[in-house]
Length: 269
Length: 125
Image (cartoon, rainbow over all chains, first blue to last red; front, side, top):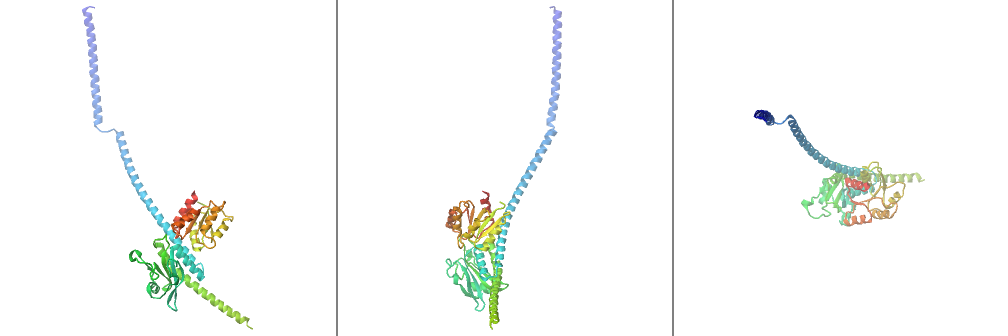
């Protein structure tokens, strides 16, 4: 190969190298621009999509917080409803007791049956183990036991007798005000003269007798709210039931006497 | 529990009415009343299917404990749930009642809600 040919060849290679170098420089320049553009893009803040997603997360977080708050509120409401339900159940139970007691008291005009019903109410609904029902003899002003229960735990209950105005029982009969002992405060033993409760049997302001309670059933610690309602009911309804049954039996007796007298008159020749 | 037939064994009309009043909470409940153990056995041999017995202890003619004992010995009646409802609140009375075969023992004065809960538990088994 001649020198001239070698020079041409070298020049050709040199030119190609130059073109390649220029191309590399251009590509480098292009990439620099691209890099700069990307850097600008990132430094100018997040894209719209990222912004939208961030807003959505914030919205969902807020909604989650509100739902949790509502859940707590509903839970509180549920507790209130549960407590209210228990209260209504109790009221329902109390009303049933009062209804049954009232219904039974006026279900008969037989004096012994009325007394029996009053006893049943005191035992089964109030839960008394030892008690007495006293009636006032208006001629002698004396209160006497006509029915009783629990003489083994309260000896003497069967023969209680007291005069109007004397002692706790006589005072209750005279004033018409119920007597309840608060053992936590007053303490002391229950005696025939100092019972757990003494409830006057009243027709309006007229006292016809007393219910005296000495001892509650083993499983019952103290009087409950419904017991005081029952005492109020007994004070009025038992009094009218006892009074009307007494009147009825007296009128029956008188009717029988008159009938016998008439029979005697009509059959006598 | 719907359409259940209850046998209430009580000598006290007041308690019979009060228990029956509570049992009306069960839809279409039929309440059959008996005044003592002998009367209860008659009602148990009658045409009505009895799903649950509620009995007092202290009753004339035949008491509740004897009734529980006889029901548990009878092949046809022995699986009927029995609840004793009584004024006897001592632990030994409770143990005695349950030992004879009663399923539950409730002391008077009764709480309607407690009675309903006890019955629901016994009848859902």
